Length: 254
Ligand SMILES: Nc1ncnc2c1ncn2[C@@H]1O[C@H](COP(=O)(O)OP(=O)(O)OP(=O)(O)O)[C@@H](O)[C@H]1O
Ligand SMILES: [Mg+2]
Image (cartoon, protein in one colour):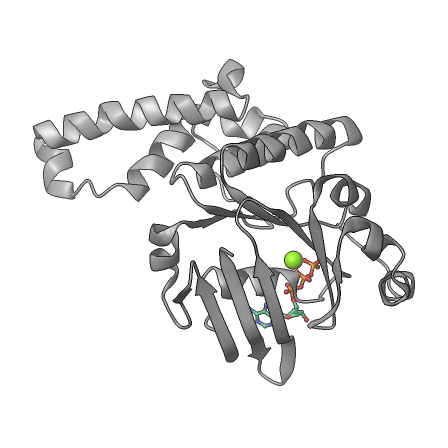
């Protein structure tokens, strides 16, 4: 088991966005979280990545209680994430984004950078090398010099995943990686996610594209109004009456 939550809850004012979530993610699984808009999916990510402290319950990562730990500690211990709204540096090239992402994760101080110490020069070479490696892995080597403002939505999604991979996480959290991309591009993304897992990284993704999730995930958790209403294999979830009702009852927007 890589991550476990017990009776996890989070309120916003009077709203219970997440309630009593007991959930575990196994090493090298691909797990998906689905549910209608506002169900608490992104809140779950925010709480398990230390972005928000929980209101109740506990989060443990690799058997270590992480409850209340700040987000940069989660990152250091091996949890990386993407956001529902992609944060990229639009004026920079694809490669620049990865280099900047790498530098943010290393400890190069201003002193080293200004004086161009041997350490700074070594880190600069390392960051280029690491960025190039990630670029190849995510399949964007062909557009490395393109400004991000000009790249397709699919490439931007891949780049956001690449940025999360720079820290070589053990657990990668993807918030709607396939939102806004077409059917063929979604297939390519599924391949990338499988490749990430085959390199030993556990993946947990939130998706509205249920068909994609059914073909990709080992296990699915379904949230509705902040609560877990079902958990199981794609086959179990596809025939679960509660899940069908939750989906039939509400309109969806990716
Ligand atoms: N920072 C916040 N402050 C106040 N309310 C919030 C905050 N974040 C989430 N919420 C509320 O918590 C509930 C769950 O939101 P969340 O973003 O987790 O849903 P979601 O399942 O990710 O939805 P979607 O599929 O639309 O992305 C919603 O009612 C939302 O308005
Ligand atoms: Mg969300």
